[in-house]
Length: 69
Image (cartoon, rainbow, N blue to C red; front, top):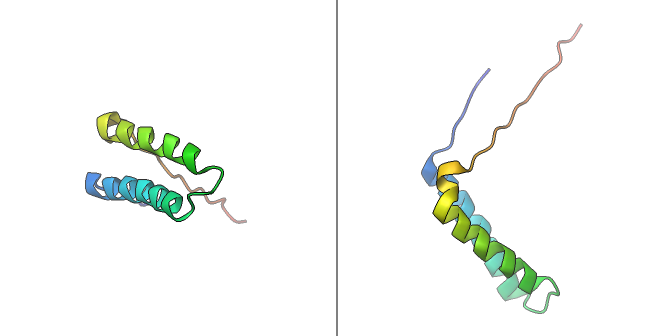
Protein backbone atom coordinates (compact mmCIF):
# COMPACT_ATOMS: atom_id res chain seq x y z
CA UNK A 1 0.00 0.00 0.00
CA UNK A 2 1.30 3.45 -0.79
CA UNK A 3 0.16 6.83 0.38
CA UNK A 4 0.70 10.22 -1.16
CA UNK A 5 -0.25 13.63 0.12
CA UNK A 6 -0.13 16.88 -1.79
CA UNK A 7 1.33 19.98 -0.25
CA UNK A 8 -0.67 23.12 0.50
CA UNK A 9 1.10 24.77 -2.42
CA UNK A 10 0.05 21.97 -4.79
CA UNK A 11 -3.54 22.19 -3.60
CA UNK A 12 -3.50 25.98 -4.02
CA UNK A 13 -2.17 25.54 -7.56
CA UNK A 14 -5.04 23.13 -8.32
CA UNK A 15 -7.68 25.54 -6.97
CA UNK A 16 -6.07 28.52 -8.72
CA UNK A 17 -6.04 26.70 -12.06
CA UNK A 18 -9.63 25.52 -11.64
CA UNK A 19 -10.89 29.07 -11.05
CA UNK A 20 -8.70 30.49 -13.81
CA UNK A 21 -9.99 27.94 -16.32
CA UNK A 22 -13.59 28.90 -15.61
CA UNK A 23 -12.83 32.61 -15.90
CA UNK A 24 -10.93 32.07 -19.19
CA UNK A 25 -13.74 29.93 -20.60
CA UNK A 26 -16.28 32.65 -19.83
CA UNK A 27 -14.10 35.36 -21.41
CA UNK A 28 -13.71 33.25 -24.55
CA UNK A 29 -17.40 32.26 -24.62
CA UNK A 30 -19.17 35.31 -23.25
CA UNK A 31 -22.36 34.48 -25.15
CA UNK A 32 -22.61 31.00 -23.66
CA UNK A 33 -26.00 30.83 -21.90
CA UNK A 34 -24.30 29.41 -18.79
CA UNK A 35 -21.48 31.97 -18.62
CA UNK A 36 -23.03 34.19 -15.95
CA UNK A 37 -24.02 31.22 -13.80
CA UNK A 38 -20.50 29.88 -14.05
CA UNK A 39 -19.08 33.16 -12.76
CA UNK A 40 -21.68 33.33 -9.99
CA UNK A 41 -20.53 29.90 -8.85
CA UNK A 42 -16.76 30.11 -9.24
CA UNK A 43 -16.19 33.48 -7.59
CA UNK A 44 -17.85 32.59 -4.25
CA UNK A 45 -16.19 29.14 -4.46
CA UNK A 46 -12.77 30.76 -4.78
CA UNK A 47 -13.50 33.20 -1.96
CA UNK A 48 -14.68 30.36 0.31
CA UNK A 49 -11.59 28.32 -0.49
CA UNK A 50 -9.30 31.20 0.43
CA UNK A 51 -11.22 31.98 3.64
CA UNK A 52 -11.93 28.49 5.00
CA UNK A 53 -11.10 25.79 2.50
CA UNK A 54 -7.36 25.76 2.94
CA UNK A 55 -7.87 24.50 6.49
CA UNK A 56 -10.72 22.09 5.82
CA UNK A 57 -10.69 20.89 2.22
CA UNK A 58 -9.34 17.51 1.32
CA UNK A 59 -10.30 14.16 -0.07
CA UNK A 60 -9.11 10.63 -0.19
CA UNK A 61 -8.84 8.24 -3.07
CA UNK A 62 -8.93 4.58 -2.18
CA UNK A 63 -8.20 1.86 -4.69
CA UNK A 64 -9.06 -1.71 -3.85
CA UNK A 65 -7.97 -4.79 -5.71
CA UNK A 66 -9.73 -8.11 -5.41
CA UNK A 67 -7.55 -11.09 -4.73
CA UNK A 68 -7.33 -13.40 -7.67
CA UNK A 69 -7.89 -17.10 -7.27
